[in-house]
Length: 106
Image (cartoon, rainbow, N blue to C red; front, top):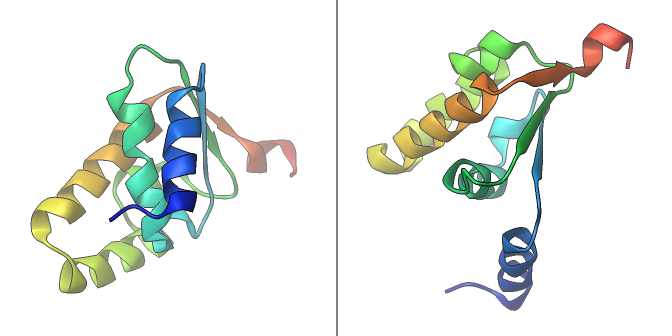
């Protein structure tokens, strides 16, 4: 069952002209964010801008470091199919041209 707040969020996401996905060190630790990442990857007709904020590209691509720790916990708690979808969505989104904010001193 989708809550009213979540329903409003989903409707708002559907009306966007583009997606900006910001990955931080702890992004993968929030399942609500992992669920939402399907929106940009499913909406291929909309531009997606990926921003990596103080996180290494390969940590997200390969799910290592903090990202890997989060996925190790998910594998013990969630269905393999769901975890695999999250992994794929993270990988696909990170493979897009990404901006690295830590390179600019932020």
